[in-house]
Length: 130
Ligand code: MN
Image (cartoon, rainbow, N blue to C red; front, side, top):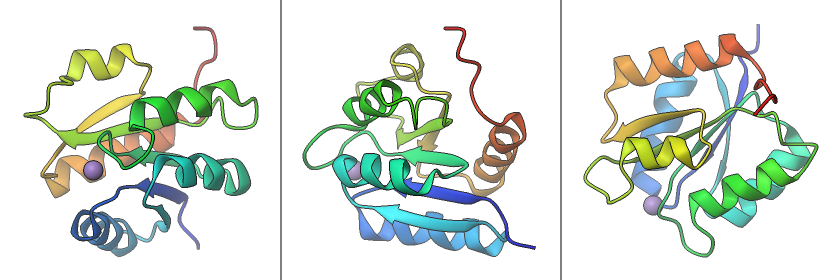
């Protein structure tokens, strides 16, 4: 049985590898983008079940990438979780206000990371009421 497809948008290779290894060890399939622009394009083309979005990226930020995903009817309902350093100025409240479906701090805690991923996948596509 193939696991759900998860798109990881992250510019740091070591962070990308950690997230990939953790997800693949649980049987999820992963695709990766190093920039927000590539992430938006890949999301549109491959419709992952979940997107994990870094905030600090070269080119457009994760917040801008989220806005582009929400503007595209094809990707609008895809769940997107922000994955970002908790010490950054964008705190959890600001990130959720930007429209993300969840927030995970870096460095990731593997157990809680996987728990949030599973929960969000089980919830499925977003309620588009708001
Ligand atoms: Mn980054």
